[in-house]
Image 1 (cartoon, rainbow, N blue to C red):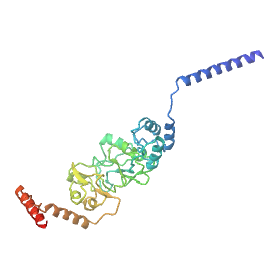
Image 2 (image 1 turned 90 degrees about the horizontal axis):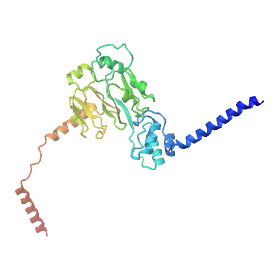
Image 3 (image 1 turned 30 degrees about the vertical axis):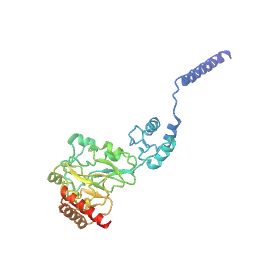
Image 4 (image 1 turned 135 degrees about the horizontal axis):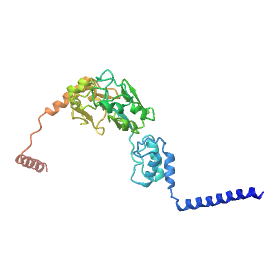
Length: 311
């Protein structure tokens, strides 16, 4: 019996000693964790998409608590509701949160673009670009092999007619698709902006049109109809300023190649041309002549005399 109890007691003593050492180590090496980190983490959706700019939801929660200047609105999947909850936990102002969505700046569909080779290698945009820049004649457009589709966790993007298309209803603007696109043609844009230039080519007009029927040719017709100074042609490519754009759609209506897309009903081409003519007539109207100092003084004296006569 003694022979049996000895090893049992020995194991028990070793267990108690190890337990004591673990308790001692936990006290010595204890790192205090702000309970707000746990509360914030529970509020975050747990997508770990990296759209906030941090390694994941845990990292964002820790940095939110540590840095009071970090906005509560960086979680795109959570949106304004999550931002408000985080602000309440941290005792801050949530701030404005403008909904965004990803937008593929290319409209080079299968029928519109020219191809220079048939890629039969690894079905990866990054792989194709690494070997031949692009299987298409346009070096700037969507390659269409689906790296963005594989990166999206929300079923918000797919390949339609050879190019990536975003489902704005499902998109949470995490930016995962934009980060993996080797062409860098996926942008995060405000959802309220309904008009976009779906082209990224900076080739001159003739070359761009030769490569793709839907390319922007830098004709500047769009700039002539815009009443808000929201679109300009830079480096052969039209660019829209989302802060100025009112999504009127006039630029899309006059675009000769269809490079400008709108998610709303477009005005007619006749309406757009009428606006352009009115702007041109206004610009051609001669400015009122400037008065000389002598003329200004004479007018002042006349006005003073009239006032004196009335008095």
